[in-house]
Amino acid sequence: MAEMVSVVPGLIVLYRRSRSARWQARIKIEGEWIRRSTGSADLDEARENALDIRTELRTHVKNNLPLTTTKFRAVAENAIKRMENELASRRGKVVYKDYISALRKYHIPYLGKFNINQITNERLDGFDDWRLEQMGKTEMSKSTHNTHNSALNKVFQLALDRGWMKPTDVPSFRVAGTKSNSRPTFTRAEYAKLTRSLRYWAESGFVDAKNSTNKFLVGERKPKQTTAEIRELLRDYVLILANTGIRHGTEMTNLKWKHLDWYVNEAGERFLEITVDGKTGNRQLIARHVAIRYFKRIQSRFPDLAEMSFDQLLKKRVDKHVFRLRSGEQTKQLNKNFEQYLTKMDLLYGTTSDKMPRTLYSLRHFYATRMIQQGISLAIIAKQMGTSVGMLEKFYSKFIPHMSAQTLAGERFDETVLAN
Image (tube, rainbow, N blue to C red):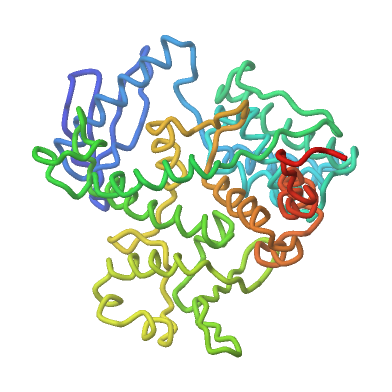
């Protein structure tokens, strides 16, 4: 039987089922009861969160936005089920099989976590780049592109029919063959700005809010424990992404301590070797030396790991995920937290005319551009990052001249010498 607490009579009711620690909220808006999770087991915090949720829902009404929505994954699976039923009854088109394959292989893995009414043109730009990388191609055929667009239309049409999005929420589709936007990355100066303040972001949840001079606490409450742990993990997650070339998402999420090892060359020098298993299969890569510091910092948060030296940890082949909160759980909130951080730092968009916001995936692009600028061959970078030379040439071609800048520029001109 559920435990119930009235917050605002007739408008907000909290309830908690016997098998759950967290409070749920029923909130009345425009005569309709909306259910939301407060995300908290603490009653006072749950009350406060429920009031914030009602304020947010009232803003939706004011701006003519849907009160209820759902994730892209759920809508896409519903659309797939509908097509499968039509195929089974022989009323569906044969091409539905291609639609289903495209949705499961590409659209759901990349867009699944977003609300259906948050699939913007900018997110589709990022999806286009990611999809090509998964395919190992520099461009898609027109027929494949049209098939994928038709599959996506099936999902949006279902969402429109169910009232989960409005016609104005549906993004436009790029015509096959048109040029995509440049991948958003960071300049060296922006990366320096980003990393300098990450420490304060990470520490903001663990300091004394009344006495701390932490800039992320000015005029704000101290973040709750889970948020604090996410910020702390995000700091090392960002730094490791930028110093390894690992893909954000599956490769980082699945990484365990047993996948780290020392590679020793003929001169006896040690390098941190990481084995990742992602969309392009299993591969080994070499991390930049500075990344070792960030792995050690993660290790220090867990008493059972901290009692070992880093060498012992690697030798023991511990079968636990690297990227976990102090609680031991993994989180899906790193992207959202990174977006909040970039917004506060005024780094969500670049200093140029970037049309896409930066994401954690931008740190992989930062790694690629930095390696190219340092003159490392595209073949080595492609092997390290699990991509192709063709993909590097397509998306990072503007940096390639830097690799041979001295040769291309020729002998330095001395202005004090008169021309012959």
